[in-house]
Image 1 (cartoon, helix red, strand yellow):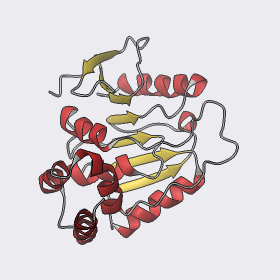
Image 2 (cartoon, rainbow, N blue to C red):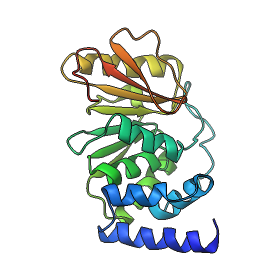
Image 3 (cartoon, helix red, strand yellow):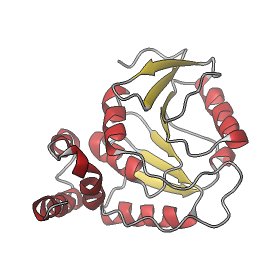
Length: 216
C-alpha cells in the first residue's frame, strides 16, 4: 500500500476498535480501495499479523493455510445474503479474516474452527484487540465438531474423509433447519441435498439445503 492508504487503513482500524465502523459504512470504504490494494488494506484494518509457518505435521486431509480473498468474502456477504440473524461458521478459519470481516459487515455472530493452534491464538488476539464480542474461535478438527450455524464457509480447508464427515454433519443439520454452504474453489456435485447457486465470481459457489426457502 502507498503511505496514504496505509494511514487510512490504520485510521479505520481505530474506528473499528471504537465500535464506530461497521456495516454499510465499512463496505463502502472497502469498495473504494483499489482492488489490487484491498487485501493489504483489510489485513491492516483488522490488525492481522503475517501468517506463521504451518504446523509441520498436519493431519491427513488438512491443507496448508491460505487466506480467502477479500472479494470472495464481500461477494459471499452480499449474495447469500448474510444477515444479522444468521450464525456464520468458517471451517478452516486460519487467522480469522473471513470471520472478522463477515461479522463487521453484518453483525452476525461468527465462529471460526481451525486445526492449527498458532493460527487460532492469533485470530483470538485480533478479535480481542478489536473488542468483538460476537466473534469466537475454536481449535479443533472440523470433522470432530458438532456443527451449529446457518451459513458455513469452506475455502478448500480439507479433503478426503474429513470433508466427507463434515458434509455428513451438515446434511444431518439440514434435516432440522435451513443450511447454506459457501465454497471457494470447491464443487460439491455429489451432495443431492444441496441446491447450487452461481455467483458473480466463478471461484465462489453458494449451496442451499433443498428444503430451505430462497434467501435471494
